[in-house]
Image 1 (cartoon, rainbow, N blue to C red):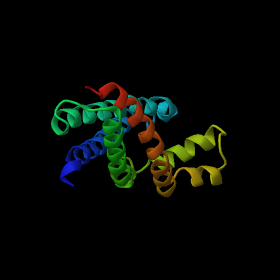
Image 2: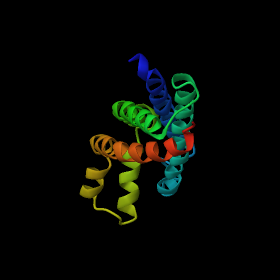
Image 3: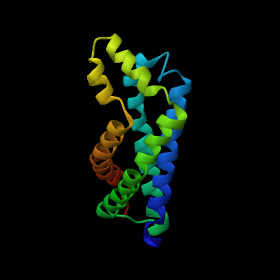
Length: 158
């Protein structure tokens, strides 16, 4: 575990940043009065997520690899970071929908039905805690793999 201290630390930071993003979304009305903009604005979290990976790999390079890190070391570190994020994501989803914004699913269901984008049955199947947990745990490995591969290119140093 000592070898993975940096990745554990940054997976916790990533999760906390994600929760702060959810708080910001809620207080800007993206989960209620401005829900029509949610689809667009929520995608900007990708920038924040990539920055967390960059800071994590830069710290890994500096603290654990003595200032030198090749691509494979960075990539593996990114994958370990991703694993930590995958483990913490269901907890973050739960906190988001139960504490931060408990009306999100109700509001999103009403919005997509009103816009004619889904039937009530489709909306209820798509917008619930179980569905979101499954989606996030399924998408996190792919996004983490991709982000780790790209960020490792830019954080390597001979």
